[in-house]
Image (cartoon, helix red, strand yellow):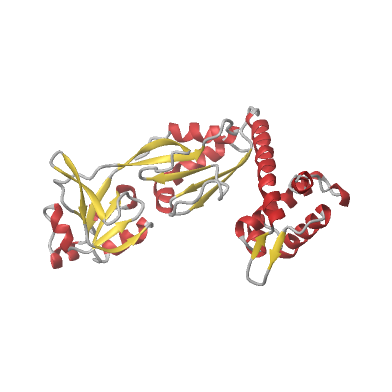
Amino acid sequence: MQGRLSTCLPRPCGNRGQNKIMDIAILRTFVAIIDEGSFAAAARRMSISKSLCSKHVSDLEADLGARLLHRTTRSVTPTAAGQCYANRVRDVLARLDEASEAVRALSDHPVGPLKIGSPIVYTLNVLRPHLLRFIESNPHVQLEVMLDDGRSDIIAGGFDAVIRIGHLPDAALTARKLHEARIVMVASPGYVAEHGAPEVPADLTRHRCLHYSNLPGSGTWPLQQGKVLIHQRVRIAFASNNSELLRMMAIEGRGIALLPLFALGDELETGALVPLMPDHALPDVPVSLVYPSRRLLTAAMRSFLDFTASLRLV
């Protein structure tokens, strides 16, 4: 048993005379192949060629004297030794990353890469005007903002933090509320002229509803009825996690939309959209900055936390 376990231990790939930085890249490539299930996807994730990705694995297998992957024309899966090795390598890489973060955290000036995920329309309409100030205040931080209306996996995506709209089910992450977004119910004048305007929540069951899937609830809309919050079941004609698409469909008269106010331009002022059911105030939803629960934060991440805390967002 002792001899079998020893094959699972990561060890330097120094037999080829390559430096340790290259060895770490080989280990990261191997883990990426396990995660992605293909050389092509792993190569894209690592920003290297597919042939180099394959060579890294071949070199690693030759150095360890063990076959790590089953290769077919359709898939790549780990052998028992490969899976065991990958599990141990992940621990090593996690500790290396923590060590790097610890060094960066000691810096008086924020430096290094910072990857933030954020919903598309929220970034363009709310966050974008403020980003230049952060960039100018942190010239040694390489800020990367990835626009994504889905709920990307923070860890797998390599994000330092993501901005989320709505309530947060993942208690394993740390969240800082930035502000609350006002929600409005709107439709085009043409839609109202043809189908009428709902007056009470139950009327929504007879209308075409355009659902913003980043809001809580599946098939229901939260509405205030007097002092009571109800979850009214609605007839969803179309759903999307992109508020811009829903805004455009509402303007075209495709149905009634429940949208964050920040997703609208001047449509309420110009009359392109009209507010509905003003006596049934819609509860605001939180907008939060979410990041992994770590003991150490890089100076760049701490600076971004301070930056977002200083913003006056609506």
